Length: 468
Image (cartoon, rainbow, N blue to C red; front, side, top):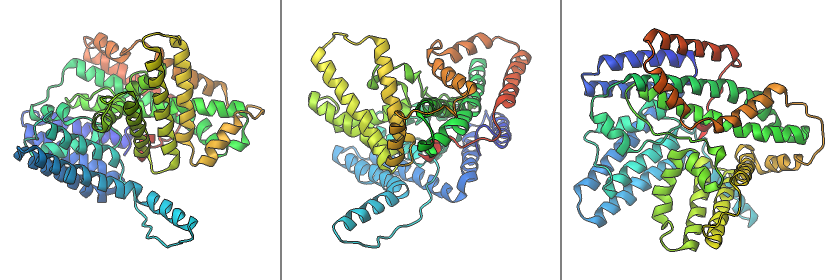
């Protein structure tokens, strides 16, 4: 059940009106939202609702054990030995079992030890990376004393299962969401207006820009790069940069908007990432909930920058490589993470050598960073290293442009131009519209949705980040 579908629209209307009819009974309201979230998740595969429940029970139990022990050694033992290890074991089994078995088989074959290793056909639960990271951050924050343990198992279950962010984030910290669950929510006019605008904006980015670029340009070119010339391949690379931004930021916008309509606040997950002038700045703007998670729960525990420049460079490189592996069990994702980590290492070394002197103009930094990111997107999107190399080789191949049309060029340019809109433009518009009469606001939102429906292509593809 995808956000931009009629089925989800009917589902959300039922959830919305039922939830607000229970606004004076917060416990029943949360129970209803939890059951609705399980129903939502079951539309992909009902068998994995049990995994979702088990993961929540695990993290609730570990947090309770940590909270009951005052001795630091025991608290750390419960955290590492049960909390983090069990979460990573679940994630590793479902997401990486096949990858490591295949790689082990190839390695053994190179040494002449061919073996038939047990290869199971494992279905990847949608959103497992997101709710696993959600659980890890909760138990770690309880151990660190940054957040108290939840007052009830119901709150932990809802924290990990809440349907707006369940399958593709943002990764909402327990310290942000649990206090909201403990009090009865209230829906202000500004929250409702902001939420509706984000949903419409997300619908436009996903169903018009991302879907059109995917179907008409990106998918055909990445499927067989040898059939196209340099213009089409370059257009496909730029098109994918716009597609993945519009696709993923659209999901985040709609998730934030849906949560707002139910009375809850989610953190911003994107902040005009393609206007970043360095790779470090890019990761402060792209998938902010993941980049901050990697910083707080991986980079800092590794030592961060506390032991000097070299240690900082090593730690950021390891963090980005593991961040690449988080995205998928493939060597292309590892290479993508290594590229981002390697560039950040180079940036740190340059800053250390040059100090505060600014030798590269901001506009040059933005252009260089954007094209390094696009180089990484080739690895990220390609199904194999062979196809990634064919994409790179094709950039030097002269040939007619058969895929790039005026419409696609307009979508690419427009998608990039979004990054130079006034910061927080949607929030500003919501502030101006909050005083509008309800009928006027409803007509504006309805007209915008009808316009999106009229111009979007037929069908809705799953969001890109569902596979992670």
